[in-house]
Image (cartoon, rainbow, N blue to C red; front, side):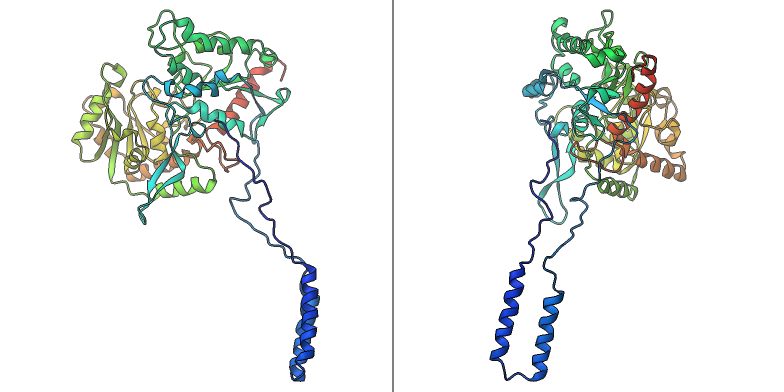
Length: 482
C-alpha cells in the first residue's frame, strides 16, 4: 500500500533540435530560384540576397526552450531542525500485512475504504457550480480518525530526514500499526492472544543492536488510537485494550498517540487527529487559509456531535445539545446511528466554516477529531475539559490557551451560565484576533500528502521529528553514545 512519488522516465524538457542540412538545402533552393526569376528588379534581387545572408549568418543551428512551471520544478527537500531518522524494516505482520484483512480491522467499520492511499482514504468528490460534473478534489480525502499511524509511516518513508544507515540515526521509528491491530482484537477474550503481536514486537526490539545502544530511549512508535486502548491493567476493567504501553521496555520509548494519558503518560505525546485536508503544495495551503479568512460566519456557535449515555465525562453533551437546539445563534449537526451527515466530511467542514465558535465536548474519551476539523475551518474551539486539548497537544497548540480557544467549565455550562451569553461577551476585535491565531495553526495540525516532497511549511510529522530530535538528544546524553 505504500508508494513513493513517481519520477518521469524521460526528460520533461527534451526538444527537437534544428537540422543544419535543412538550412543548407534552403540556401541552395533559394539560389536556384533566383536564376529563374531574372525579371525581378535589381531592388528585389538585392533585398532577397540580404534576407538570405541574414538567415545564413544569424539563424542558430539549434533551438533551446526553457520551461518553468511550479509543478514540474519541485523545491529541493531539506531536513531542517531534525536529526536523521531510521525506519525499522519490520515483518509485514506488524504493519502492512494487517491490511490484507482490512474488512476485519475494526469491529464497527469495514476499514478497506479507509486504508487506501496510504491511509488517506477515498478522495472527496465535489460537484462544481459551473457544471454538474463530479470531480475528485486532489487535496481532500475522507480520512478515518484512527488512521494516523499509517499516514505517519508513509510520510516518513518519503521524508528528507530519513536515513538508511542506522549508525547515522539520532532517532529510530518503529512502524507498528498498533491501533489497527488493537481494534481488530477488541473482542478477543483470551488476553494472551490479544497481547501477542505487541509482545512479539517488544521481543524483537530487545534483540536489536540499535535498541541496546540507548535501551530504546531514542526509539518512537506512532499509534492511531487513544493510549487507553494499550494500557490494560490487572486491576482495571477490561474493555478490549492490550498491554503495549504498560510493558517496561515500551516505557523507555516515545509514543505518539492521538490521546495521551494525562496522569500516567510521561512518555506519551499527543499528536493531532488527521482531518480531511492533505495538500501537496504550499499554494494549496495558502489558498485555503485565504478562503476561510474571507468566509462569512453567520452563526455564533455550532456543535457537531450527539449525546453519550452512561458516560460521566460526556454529561455536558446533553446540555450542549439542549442549549444549541434552543438558540437561534447555534447551528446543530446532531450525530447518531443511521443516515447521519456527521460522517460526510464536507458537511462537517461547512457547518464549522459558517460558525465563529465550535463547541468541543468530551465523548467516548476526552479528545475529539472535531477539534482539528474546527481549526481547519478557522472556527475557534470551545472546550469544557482541559484534557480535550490543553494537556494533550503541547507540541502543536499555543501554551497560552486564551489566544486560540475559549474554556467553559462543564459545571458552569450545566449551571446558570448559558454558553451563548459567554460567547456573546467576547468582543468582535477579540474574535478576529483569536480566529487569526487559529488559521495560522492550520499548517502544523495538518498531515500533508505522503507523496509531497517539500511543501514549504512544517506539518504534524515535521513538528514531531523536530521535537523528538530535541527530546532524544537530551535523553541520550546520560548514555554517552550519541
